[in-house]
Structures are given as C-alpha cells and as structure tokens.
Image (cartoon, rainbow, N blue to C red; front, side, top):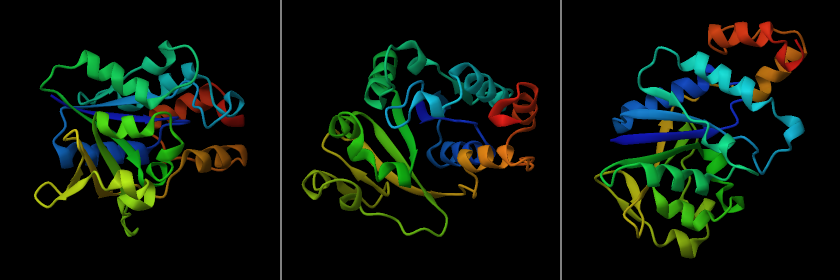
Length: 215
C-alpha cells in the first residue's frame, strides 16, 4: 500500500489542491491520497483560520465520489498545535511494514522546513514529495536544508530522487499547480468577485450557504 499524506490548511480546498493530488497519485502510482487539514497550525494564529468543522466539510464535499481520495481528522484529535512529525508517526504506527508513506508539500513550503518541529527527524521518517510549479527552477537540497544534513542524501538517477540514510527519498516533481491560492480565493470573496471554476461546485455552494469568508 502506497499512501500519500497531503497536509495543509485547506482554507478553502480548491481545484489546484485536487489537481496536484491527482498528478502526484499518478506519478507515484499511489493507492490512496489522504487529505489532512491542520487543526492549529503553529505558523498561523487561530483567528486567521476558518473553523476545522467547515474546512472538514468542504474537503469531504470536494473529494466525494473519488475512491482514491480520503480524509483524516487526526490533527484535530490532538490537543494543542498541529505538528507534521506527530502526524507521520501516527500513520506509521497504523500502517503495515510493507506500506510506503509519501508526504506531499509544495516547494515554497519545503524551503521553510527548517522552521518545523523536529525537521531532521521528519525528513528521515518517510518519503517526501516536493511539488514544483511548471516553469519554476528546481531547487537543490542544500538550498532548503543545511549542507551538512543535505550531504546525507544521495541522488538516485533511476528513481530520480534523493535517497536518505533511512532509505527514504526526497522527490522533486513538476506539477500543474495552477495559479490558484486559498488566500486569493478569500480575497476575491471579500471583494465580491467570482470564485467559480476555482473551487469544486459543491465547495462553492457550501461557502455561500454558510456565509464563509465574508460573503
């Protein structure tokens, strides 16, 4: 079983998220991609984030009918802030020894990995998939993490990824991220602009039905 762990605030989930997930699923032949919304992200204040309940409902509406996409509220089950290292440990404990985990994140987020809790341990726990926007220059590991730590990873030409000392990989892959962001969607809504075709129709209806983001 090959599982993709796709974390984020998802405030709201949009078509860019879903297209990225689909492309990564296809590239790595993943059996399932699990959307894992952060409950209390350490880099954001609670005042900036829509309630977990609404974000959960929007994700479930967006992925409904896709048997490969699923949802986890693991980060809302824990008390305190959401830390990815704890989430990965959670899935490792509940997966078989033959299962492979692929933690999915964007290149811009990966470049901030040093600010994450236990980031060195994190990068050795499972495979990482760093999504790069089409047309953007690919980063070197030493540009995101200290050179001494990056030196523990060796590039594998066959698998096109950086193999670490625990035999987990860091893969960098170009995907069609689309020029869509949750912050832009929120701003458009606050300014009375249309977000049609930026989010799934069911999510669009949910936002207006529940008067989210100032509509």
